[in-house]
Amino acid sequence: MFIFIILFNGRQDIYSRAYSEVYKKNSVFLDNYFNGIVHIMKVLNSISKDTFHLDYFKTNISNTEKSIIFYNIAAKESSQEIALLLENMQLLNNLYNNNSFFIDAPGYDEFQEELSASFKQYY
Image 1 (cartoon, rainbow, N blue to C red):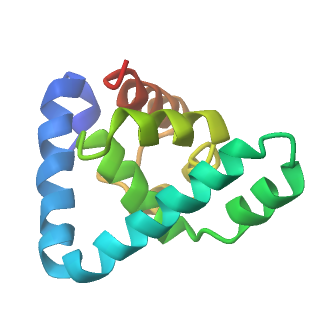
Image 2 (image 1 turned 90 degrees about the horizontal axis):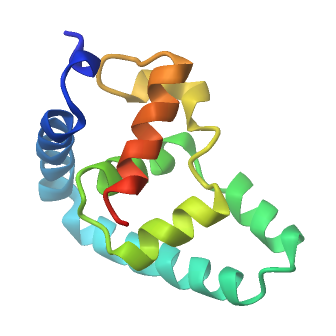
Image 3 (image 1 turned 135 degrees about the vertical axis):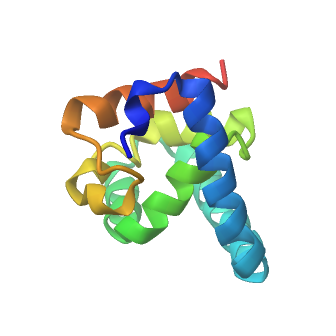
């Protein structure tokens, strides 16, 4: 299956269905997880000159967590505020290193385009 030949709107529907399945099975955990992550990101954003804590935060989020966050953003299940914080913090930038978490295992360029399109839908 090569979904990257489909326009982003079509892929967004696929991402939404994939995220929906994960969310249905894990909503009790994901609600609290996203609330915690959002709070941490807001605090880190308010002390933006402190790169030590931001780097510490980024290194302690697993690729599995980053993948779930990516699908949340790509499925447009997040708020604009959170999407912009994620983009500014560049939390998902090195996620490509584990592309096995993604539908159709995209190449580097495909992944960068996907990440960009995912964030652009919030502007």
